[in-house]
Every structure is written in structure tokens, then in C-alpha cells.
Length: 85
Image (cartoon, one colour):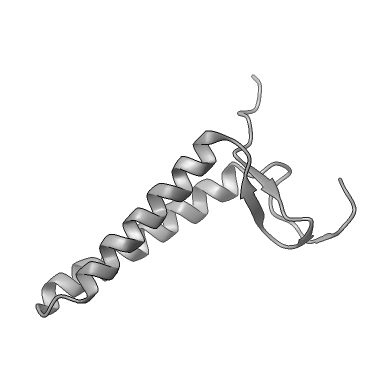
């Protein structure tokens, strides 16, 4: 079975992922930023329950986003010193 095409390029220096390299990666990043905008709006509400829901959405969205980026980064996440693998 072939491995799925990576959505994100690896960072050249450091640990983690770089910018998206496919439309799926850009769509994931755009969707995450949209969720952050909604959570920011929810944070400005006066009702504490709405703010709590916003925080829960933020935690769930961030965990999902990081997990997908980790799975879809070419070569995985590891420390890089600038040389191409």
C-alpha cells in the first residue's frame, strides 16, 4: 500500500512542519484559522458558559490540527540542521 501524499513540507531548521505544499494543507490551515476567529469572537461574549465552550473548541481544534499536520508532514517531525534528508 502506498503512503498518502504529504500535505506539509518539513522545516529546514528545527523541529516540526513548515508551510503547506498541497491544497489540502492550505485548506486545513485555513479551516483552523477560521475556527480560531470564531473562538476569538466567542471569547468576547459575556456569558461564561459560551467562553467555556469556546475554550473546549479551541483545545479540540488545536489537538486535531497538530495531529493531522504531524501525520501529513513529509519525512515526519524530527530535528533538522539545514541539510536535506
